[in-house]
Image (cartoon, helix red, strand yellow):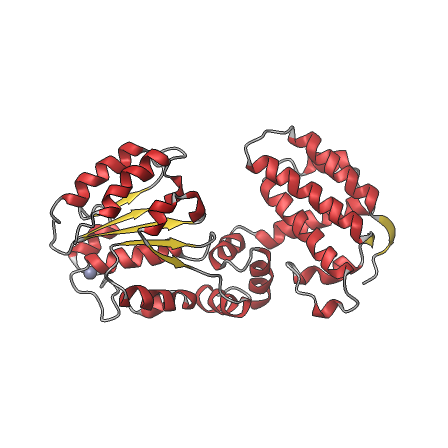
Length: 332
Ligand SMILES: [Zn+2]
């Protein structure tokens, strides 16, 4: 394999990691969908491969590579949550592995993902390994929310931040490597903070079609052709996270449009909806902020594990929305 195995926005990080090899522990951090795990997988495969390329990529052909593909390489350990947490017993077992001799003479590799799933006891157990490096074992920690890790863990790792590519770069990757239609790629990327793997996942799961259906229903609500109770009933099979995310993005787009006289200069999260936004009923910027706040509060309540009666919560949300939008054209 060559550098072409990596999406373009990870190549710089790859080079950096290759040039800095004195760190035995690396913390890869960044939001979901940027390819952190892919980078970590390539790093450990390259380390354990018997015939890596000059760029450090695994050959994909040797015994070591075959064992990794089969998920049974004795020198590679991948630690993932057991339930919601990475438990202290999982880390204790790891310590025995780290201090043992490698089976294939190319060192050992440990991948912990998501590292923030370690509780305090697990993180403390790992500290000892981080403090007393064992020359031939590299530790790769992958985290979306690194601040949930104790500072003592973070400070003992080389911390590498993975950033989202530009819309243009993300689009190029989606169209060239995955044959996605460019317009669709741009729309979906804008809806997910430019995280290309999230975009790809959404495209593969019919995101646009589903979004269009929901937007059509929401339109009917705002034009008072559909009442809040019926709408709440109709969307009950949708993922509430996804539904609330979409509504909050529509409201954010409307807020941005309400603050400008020139819609073409506004960077929207769902730019292909501009025309539809402009035909929505009139609403004040203040009301939009209030509706957004209400939507985000419900999202937060769901995310924190509170269990509001979803049907009632959505009815109440939709009732506020239908009250605030007036049946006059929304002028932008
Ligand atoms: Zn190989």
